[in-house]
Picture 1 (cartoon, helix red, strand yellow):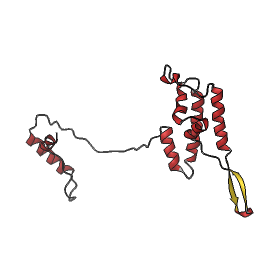
Picture 2: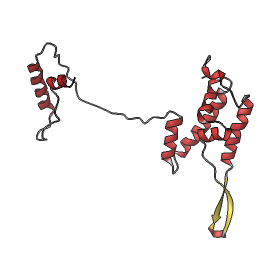
Picture 3: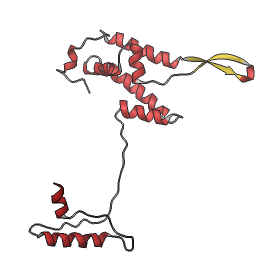
Picture 4: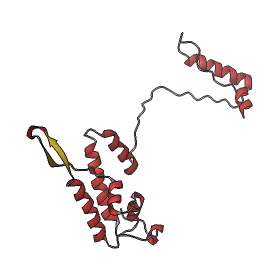
Length: 176
């Protein structure tokens, strides 16, 4: 998939003039994340030591490290020559976020995937039964009211009290 041609983003001023400059900035971000060190107290040895503590990859973090905002970073994809580089970086962030879903902070990872990678909650509903279609054209108001009442009685569970009130035609007309 290539970037769309003739887009309006082609006129925007770019901080990174070449693909190589963009790749250097992106790779620096990933290296910085991978090599992040923090001080930790090692109880057995009664000392503090520097240990690796890789930082999660994020699109916002990548943009910040490059001196631009997330939207500007994504807008680089609208330029054909930058598209493969940004796509590769997005895919790397996406992969890291998915991998972290298996860890302790699934909520944050899910939020990131929904907001940066178009993930959606999917609900599947299975339904069974039959649908009756009755032609009500030409029926009077009285005949329609009788049919509604009869239908409610057919679907109302036995001995479960009254069903929810269904508005009659006259009520619907009054609300209009």
